[in-house]
Image (tube, rainbow, N blue to C red):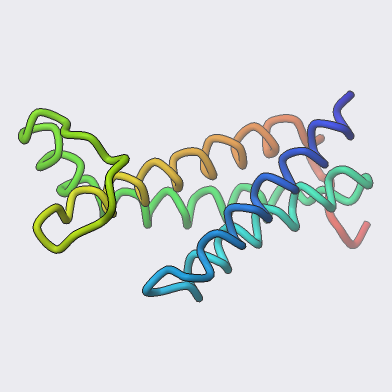
Length: 124
C-alpha cells in the first residue's frame, strides 16, 4: 500500500514538473517538483532518505514563506478566483498558485519524512 502511494505521489509531482515547463521561471519549479518526484520514487523502492526529505521540505517551506505577503494581499482582496488566466492586472493568481503548490509539496515531503524510519539513508 505504501509503495503504491509513493509511486502515485512520484507521478503526481512529475506531472507538476512537466506542467511547469512553460512557466516564466521553469528551472526553479521543474527542479523543485522534480526533486519531490525523485524522492517519492526512491521511497517507493526502499531507498528513502529522511535527511534529504526534511531538508527539501525546509527549503521549499522557506521559499513558500517569501510568498506570504502576496497571500495576505489576496485575502485582503476578498480571495478572488485564481482559476482565470494570469494577467498583469491580477498578479495574485500566480502568487497564490505558487504558494499552494509549495504548500502541497511541503506537506507531502513532511509526510514522507515522518513515514521514513530514523537513520534511513540512500547510501546505507
